[in-house]
Amino acid sequence: MVCAGWLSRLAVVASWLGGHAGWPSWAWLDSLLASDAMARLRVDLLSGRGLTIFALPGATGTGAHLLHGLTLLPLIGLLLGWKSRWMALLSWLVVVGWYQRVPGASTGGDRLLRFALFYLALGRCGAVWSLDARRRAEPWVPALPVRLIQLQWVAMYLLSGLEKASGGRWLDGTALHYALSNLTFARAPELSATLTSSAALVPVLKVATVSVLVWELAFPVLVLFRRGRWLALTVGVLIHIGIGLTMSVGPFTAVTLLGYLAFLDRTPVPSRGGAEPDSCNPPSVSANP
Image (tube, rainbow, N blue to C red):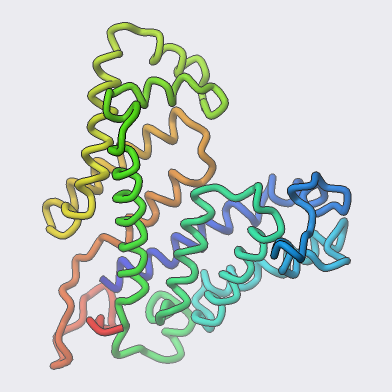
């Protein structure tokens, strides 16, 4: 469990840094934070939008680039595991600040990252594979952050499945056909056109549609059991890779798959009697938060 938990920490931070530390994030700063930005991006304190350091008067032009660079420091600190809980909290405030300032640029993947960073701030996310661990070993590591990430992913699939099962194109098997027909989100329009225009692929898309629905509804139960968990995660990897190859959905595919690391629970939770720690992770995991 500890391996899965701290792999999740590294994955979450690396994913966010990958999207926000490089281009095009820097190239878009001027247009996103400009004082004459489109109305939906402007600061509106009465509605709660802009309660963030990115709404400061100097957060434009060169000041915006400097501020953006400074706010990446907590994420780097969390990646290295330096004062991890404080860095996790500061990182969460940074990404929430970005959302408050530019809500239109947020995607489903960004929302999952915000949740995951908040959950990491609740636990000792620097217990291993970190600078903190080099200074002080943690004898016990609460499993709460990992459990919360697991619950977040389970809730996402369950609620999505219930919404799909309430009626409409998911029940008649045409949802994927229409989703692929929407060229606004098509990553490869030619491929999408081929998949939706071929009569031979109509039954394939119907089976795939129903399979996704069944998988989402079954996911919360399957992950409770070791064999079922591997089945649920394997199917999920295939589904999300398919989504990533055919549709432009921002970081959602990558973030969702990174969240699967929290389910890689190979280490039994020991009692407080002092069981042998796992070889890949010195600390034991406490069943209590």
